[in-house]
Length: 48
Image (cartoon, rainbow, N blue to C red):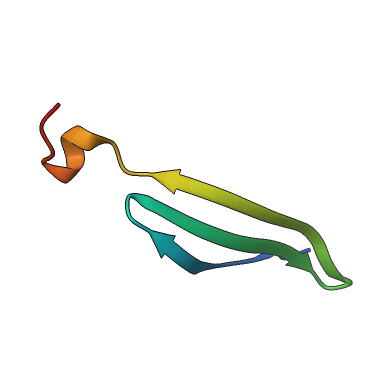
């Protein structure tokens, strides 16, 4: 069957971005996930 993926940013705190998501099929949600993504200094343009 088909799968449907959905994700959303729930908040940000400086270089951190908090995300939640889920994967569902015809019977409902099969997986839920939470993640924290941290942008490295070099990508932010910060110096050491």
